[in-house]
Image 1 (cartoon, helix red, strand yellow):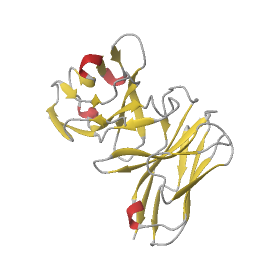
Image 2: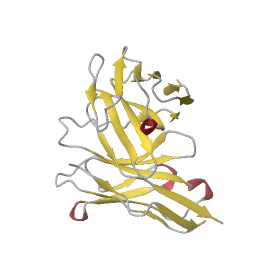
Image 3: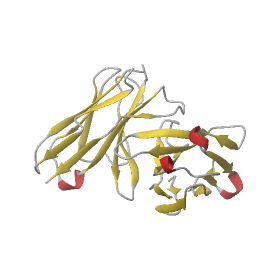
Image 4: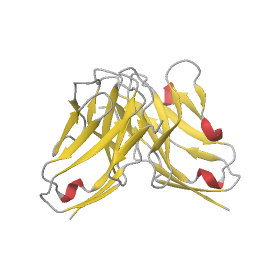
Length: 116
Length: 113
């Protein structure tokens, strides 16, 4: 079965530092890949997605992610962290064996803290 | 345009009680989903409805039932609540069965004592 691993349940960075949140998936068939962000007491909001084409994907709020098929990874980065980036981030993949591309498998999440 | 709305925002139930979580979307989306979120486990799919009139089980359907009332509304029912169902429940919708992004509601925080 498809699975998603997010390395590090908590990541702490200084304001202005690089943000790197890691995501690896298990499928041998390249899935569709997503990063969602959840601010406190809110629902999830899509940051960016990869379906086909260019492997470097840019999203909202200065985030980007690169799909690396050889490493089965889709790590999320932002060059310079801002205090407002503090949130929980979820990596998700589609399940190509579900009989339809309409189901997402989520990672456990990474809580990002940004300190002054 | 409110997007995806959920009611109630908070609920406390006693073991064995029943309740229905309501979800509605105003984006004319075909597909709708119910997830539960537990610490350290991400979101897990309970049920989904690919289109009006259809529903299917997700990863963790036991103890739940759903109704796709019409294109806009998708409800989740707990017939006999158990403490293991204490969680945050999210409803989501998407345009269709192709991989379109899912739009999430604000969630319902349920505690079963």
